[in-house]
Length: 399
Image 1 (cartoon, one colour):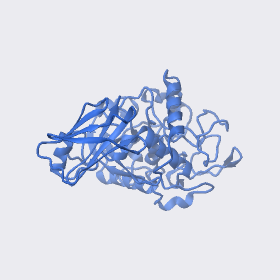
Image 2 (cartoon, rainbow, N blue to C red):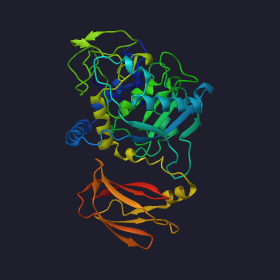
Image 3 (cartoon, rainbow, N blue to C red):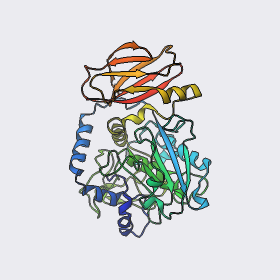
Image 4 (cartoon, rainbow, N blue to C red):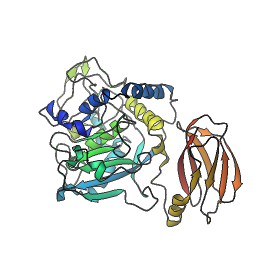
């Protein structure tokens, strides 16, 4: 019931020492490192306040999340195929929509449709077309745990894309991820790292982690879920994953061995376990609520599908050339379009971080609009423009 997944490349040697069995992720060592960061207390408090103040709404809206997969390869087997990448995206969309056939594995708890849909990006950060896949060769061994993957291939804008690096992660872990706003983690490294032999269901995958569940597990950490058994490093029932409908357990479980701990049967089917892929099958309703709350309060800009919306050359040009300034603003901001842009039936909306629509006034300018948001409180907003030839979303900060 607890433990979050992250990964600090600089402490992975410590990850390898606590078990002779290959673990599912490198989060345990990361958690210890984060707890020593000088900003850890404020980070924890801010997260708690954000969750406590969040209005539980839009829990049943399907959220499309743009994904970019960075393939870093030293060996030919690490340069995985597009088919292998597509198989992993398919697994994510089944697992996060409760469409996987093995939900029957679930026992003793609720089974949730998280309603996240993952889509390979169609435009890159500069507005040009993309497949949502990058490929980079390297001579560096174990690059996934060497603190060099992000230097070789920095993340695309982490506010707009879920970045996944698929590469060599060494002999002792399958992958790792950073939770939202992790102290000490740069935007260039924020995302998920997965071993190439544990990504997807075809190609170079290796049993018993050949059904794509490592990525399902790490994506959950990226959206702030903890491991079922908690944050303690030795068997104990004293810690919790902050989820009320996941049975507490005292330590991690490998393989598919039925076990009772902390007064209840461990839920082996939960995606936040360390069991074999074939034994997994579900998230709980409590886990769904936490992940969606993390999205709305900490990874809020992902929900606006930036990176997936543009469908034509005209749209790409408009996306790249549209300007919003000044940003940050004290209350008046200009939205400027290219000179050839036609408004048609353009819809313009302003949202706060919870998805609430904010009222504002506009007047026409020479090449766009002047927006007056003086009445809005200070904070972070998202301006969305939708029309026949444009789908544009931009983060806007009000001082």
